[in-house]
Image (cartoon, rainbow over all chains, first blue to last red; front, side, top):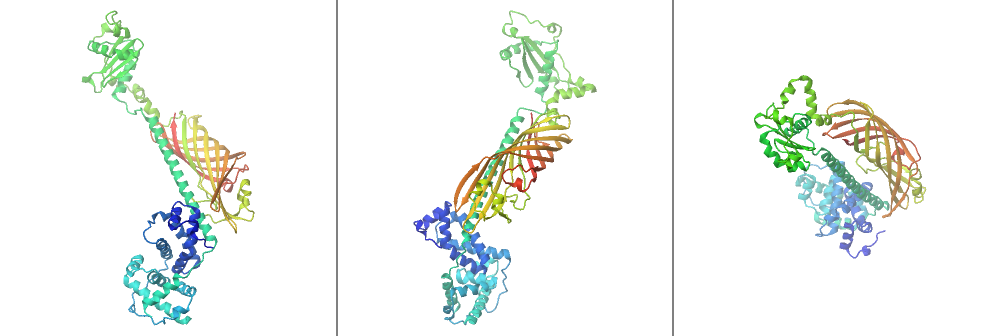
Length: 183
Length: 422
């Protein structure tokens, strides 16, 4: 059950208490953000058990590094970045990130109807994303959902920007085909 | 629908999606945080103890080594010769030194030995001696001019003339030739030991010297449910908690709980005196203080309880050492012995739902053990040696609180320390 952060007056007070390693504050922070962050982890790794492990490791990092959050930018953004990095690290360790060569159909527009995405639930979409090949999934998550640029993605995975665009395009096509099947 | 629109729709759907973590995840995170915190504390504690031990050892070495010179200096030669001359009946008084002697008489009266670069003034009872190396003969042939006068004469020269038989017969300074002594082979060793006695005796591992050892001892565990050498890695084996938790804990831990047990390396600090029995054999005894750390994680359906146990022991080992090899700066030996340890206190820290409670109890009985091993000692200076003694110890079942010793009675021990020659 998620408890509210009423015990702490505001987010700043909650974070100050977390910096002091107050167990109640840590638990409150966990309960506030763990569902969102577990979703992030699951989107990247596609496996619940693995996502759980990443959530565990990510929160350990959060509580140990929380002093380094300087208050600029949203805390949730800072938090999300930690979980994305932890997930990417896990993918790199498992050597599951396979990036194909650049494709010629990078600029291809999708033919999927706008109503299709309105008909499926978030749960169904999550299931589809989880089933994506790891390389597609990573780039699609970073670009389409997290808002990273191709330059940032290329730097993150040590690939060319063209490869990043290619992966994104193929991920969209892959997802479109699955959505067509559902329809 | 264009790509941008597609991405936007996907993003909106995902933003509204929440996955609920399972209920046990927070407990797992809290446990990991607590372990890391304790690991940091433990690391800091060990680092501080180690630093303190090294600093104390270095300070002791410096203290014992200060003021000792292993090389014979000109001053030492003068001092030795002057002492020798002071015991001889023939003493010369130089006219040239008469005036100088009166200037140093005040110091001599106070009972001081005054050494200048080439001179030495020694007070011996009512006599004052002044010895000087003559500058023109400082080579192999050392020439010492010795001046003697009575204390009274320094004070009241006019009242009573100096009554020294040699004064009249010898007007020139006595020549004490080291060269002549060295020429005689029979005297060579004698003179050498005379001049280098201190350094010679201290450089080698003297067979008859008593040793004082300050040491630390760790025992890496090979038990399946123990923690690795570096600390707090998770052990995998499960234990019924009632089998591994002491009586005081059983009151707080439900019966049907499954627990992980982790043992950390035992750490000992000790002092030991080693007395020689003969040329090769010596016996040693002393005091050891040992800490045994254990962690018990009790996990039930409803809660997680973690117990940290620290056992404090003080022990008296009695060991026999037999030298296999003893050269200039290296000694190799074997050892065997027995130890009796008395448990001082069992300290329990229980972490339950983020709340920490501390309990304690005394430990009854004695823990007996036997050990055997070998060791190497390297002499770092005249009075201290660094030694490393790997050994194997067996701990008997003496109804002591459960620890690494009951889980793994046969243990490898690595003792590292300094021995100081008294």
